[in-house]
Image (cartoon, rainbow, N blue to C red; front, side, top):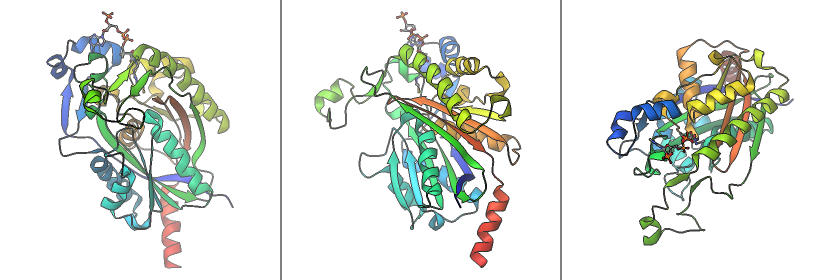
Length: 343
Ligand SMILES: CC(C)(COP(=O)(O)OP(=O)(O)OC[C@H]1O[C@@H](n2cnc3c(N)ncnc32)[C@H](O)[C@@H]1OP(=O)(O)O)[C@@H](O)C(=O)NCCC(=O)NCCS
């Protein structure tokens, strides 16, 4: 019998330091009005000097494990989706595995930029469906504010830090991840890049002087690509799940900016109230954004078994993807788990 992969735990973490648009007015030639009108962002969170992608991910992951009523050693695989790892080596997932004590788990990183959480759900659910893992911890964490040039007003106003995590678990019922659609197109036009620090352009005094370790973006082109591909990939995932838009309880999109979200919602002909939006308080938190938004959604309202959610993202790479979830009967999964243990 084929397994499905259901979310049984979730958690998120946002750093305490808030950077408002008015704070940014002190740093670059911008205004609260410009940022709000063009992006919908009012404030974002910034990691403290001693916080990293792994340390934020660990807090979110502990919360997800607690909610799933699981111990770290019961996890078979840790995946960390991030564009801003602690180091090139070791993988951030390994640092998270170690700090949590997931002693029975494999661990690896996944880089699909802002689509990382969707790609992570795709990988995690395949591990579970194929029987190679029973429980996967998927952590999405970003410290994007360390990779923006604080003198470049076209990017530094957009990004924030944070982490989200989910536990995915095998279930024999048709619930959890119902479908995934993924897409990519190598960014040879260099629309959204961090040029230096890899094998193509190793770190040197010159790369540092040229600020080549910071993110560069041609926002206008990214904007158009994002709207087109988010709408298309959302439709693909829905069709694969045999569902229609009216059957969705909510759409939880990557929080890139409000104009992208509104344009996507209009392209899908979706009522505004079905889109969950928190970009105003977090900015764009990359791979972490959907997991953070989903955590806020789930913590703020009751969700029924059988509710359907569409998650959709676009990001650097370029990458895009969407996932349809059917909310699982978590209590039944936890009960079956306990029965197996006592048998
Ligand atoms: C970045 C973005 C907000 C810029 O908005 P835009 O309407 O495209 O603006 P433009 O880039 O055309 O710039 C318009 C003007 O505003 C200026 N500008 C850019 N950033 C500014 C800021 N923070 N404050 C004030 N002015 C700014 C530009 O310099 C330009 O000035 P000019 O006309 O004198 O040359 C928008 O392109 C965007 O949201 N892109 C997608 C970004 C994104 O979400 N990427 C991640 C995807 S995962």
